[in-house]
Image 1 (tube, rainbow, N blue to C red):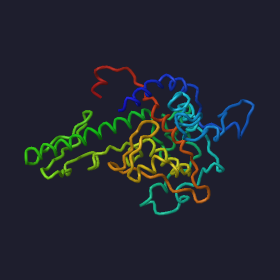
Image 2: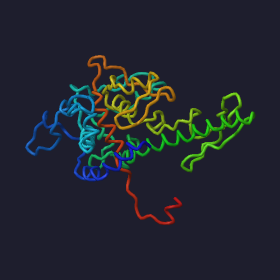
Image 3: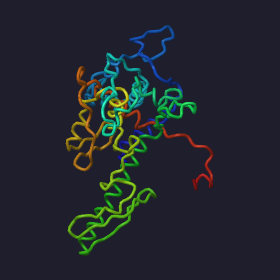
Image 4: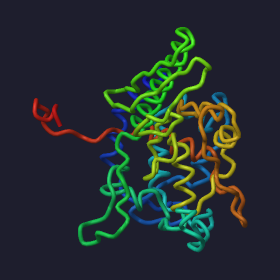
Length: 318
């Protein structure tokens, strides 16, 4: 975990606890649907985009707000998470408009929603719980997002540990002129063994619980991506029909480049397979400004972990 991530995560905890207590589920845009209760988001989507991604010297840009006023970015990200997107803003249809070969493209089976909170927003607009009840056992039951930033950080740290072990096994094999087998262990989790060979190669046939590239992928049900940013772009496309096709970080990293997202996650396309952003919408082109993804990523990075009941020796043993 980078020091930048540590400082930001600690600094925003109090703000998250406060904002979670006052949030609602899906929220309308008051500039589009004004009401006497003044219930909803008081900024238009264009206002929330501001001056786009910009930089640390560009007022009202996502980079400027994340670095100079992180609480504001979290609040904006939460509102974007709850925002009901309209057809005029690019919402719908989803992958293939529901038609195609679902055996090769699972996104065809995704449900269509108009906000992140529709699937993840019960109760009270948090990213914490799905909204289904036991009377609908076949319904969506979207997973909770508590501690999502912690999951990203832990997966990245475990990946680094496993790859360092592999590199060490190869180094020892070259020094000793014979193969060296080492246990793959990180955070108390065993991932099998890896064998380094004197010729600089490695035998990963005994790796378990993770792909042979030793990258832990904590996002989507099938564990297919490594970062919150990929998850956001993929979910906007699969679940809402919104295309973040111009995302500069995912475009660069998926083409083999190395980038650091505004939230501090390193995406290195030379080491990992990074999911590219979706293709532009045939009618609207790019539908999601990178600033929107920046605020959503920062919000979910800092989303608090789930609460615990009384902790004692019994709970310590699971």
